[in-house]
Image 1 (cartoon, rainbow, N blue to C red):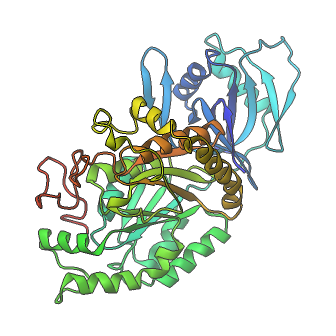
Image 2 (image 1 turned 180 degrees about the vertical axis):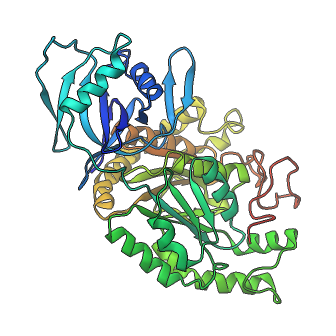
Length: 462
């Protein structure tokens, strides 16, 4: 089970071992400043401010929560990007206590692992050198190489946005290989890389066999590799419209209507859709929305343990295809009928207060929170990588948004990393027109909104 620790972690690779050091102490103790100096001295950032700790056969693995991955706070400058990694913990330094001249090495118990603990003074120019000496003298023996970097296999329906996803992954530090023949999969995975690997594999791939691919993914997992399968889905009518607008032929029906190819491909990819770790439905997502969704999940590689998304939505636009759990909030008092609240959303405190004033709100939120808290350990035990909790109301702008925010806050207070997504908040009240981002589908007026973003699925998505 993954735990979250208020700390900063950095890692050092001396060519023989790659080990992480936890920097402990309250806010203002100098954790981020010392991390910045260590990074400048050749160390690598693991996580700043919050560290995820996951027991494994390689030891206690430290990594960054999804929202903090790839970020470092630099006082007086702001939040700056800094690549992160996942590494076994070898030592903890307590910056809140000044050490004796000859300190006694203590032991810190973290998730059943005994980690050496030293008081440490972060002040002075010699702090990076002293930290390195402390790791060499008192740190646990490390791995002979880096933790195996994760592999993300991106697949799904043609036109659903795979090229957009792969470009977003490349922009967020992944090594991307598209349309890889399955015969080359093992050779590519066996190679060395300093970046997470993202592979685009779909029906265009030479000798494509979805069952063989699913079996290969299962075998890699059994061998201890961190492999995830991302499946991109989309409604048939939207896919047909995209192929019509771009004048591209469907790869499985070059001489027949696109609808025939879509049906054949959906049937072909069924085994992968059923075994996917994460399903993203791009039906109503703009290019910007889809890239943001990918950055949210994968900007720092994979987070160990269960990644939870709380999503608000409107039933008028349909159920989210990626939802694992769905809760209906249409029984709560509707701010839509208040003329002052109607133009607002559930992000506004006045709307949230209106929803919370309903007598059924508090007991419902309590029960949902308790239910989810009880389910999360089971999902994690079964190896589920992603869980999407969908909170719905009629339009997806008021009640569902307010409840989703409150639920996400409660789960985060329990140290559960949560991504909060409002699927339909940008829609105009009483209309289906998207007012933020480039729509992938036609608006209620039947015309595409005109802006600079290109719809997902156009151009190179086949």
